[in-house]
Structure formats: structure tokens, C-alpha cells
Length: 144
Image (cartoon, rainbow, N blue to C red; front, side):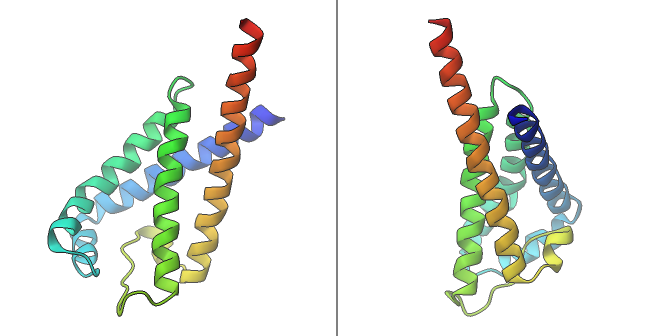
């Protein structure tokens, strides 16, 4: 049961990152415009334009293999925590204007729904990371 939960959760994270990266890449000019319309320096917006889709694809790739899944879960947790923090700041009115640079279905969510969505995936990520790490730790103790 635990392995099924982990496999399904990791598969959901892979789908999430592939979907997010593809939606950014397929609407690249729109994504560029949205990023440059954020309250970011132009240089940082340009960095994010290339970094985010690449990070999402690399994270999905790392999640695909048993050998790299823990690194993928750490990267995924970092991305989800960053996105969740950004949405939290938006909801706290940290900036004067906050155009969403999310793509696809996510762009149609309210900020509250988007925050809840991110929290669910972040908590799922943390649970699976814990299960993966503790499972490997106990396997190493058995083989010693």
C-alpha cells in the first residue's frame, strides 16, 4: 500500500512538472510577457523565463528513476515551496500588481484555489520524501 501511494504521488508530481513546463514552452511569448509584467527586475525575469521550464523538466526527469528520486523530491519541494511562498505573498498584497504567469489550467484558478493546490502537492511531496528516505535508511540497516 505504501509503495502504491509513493508511486502514484511521484507520478502526479511528474505530470504536474511536465504539464507546467510544456504550458510555459508552448506559450513562450505569453509566458515572457507575463514574467516581464511581474514586479521583478528585467534581468531576473529573463533568468526565470529559461530557468523555470528547465527546472521543471529536470525535476520531472529526476523523479522518474529510483536512483535519483530523492533528489527529484528535494528539487520538487524547493520549487513547490517557492511557488507557494510567492502565492502567499500575492494574497498578502505584498506587491501592487500581481499578474499570474501560470499556464494552462492553473491560470484559471483563483489565488486561494492555487494556494490550496500548491499546499496539497507540497504536503504530498514532503510525505513521499519522508517515506522514500526512511525506506532507504531501513534498507541500508538491513543490509549492514
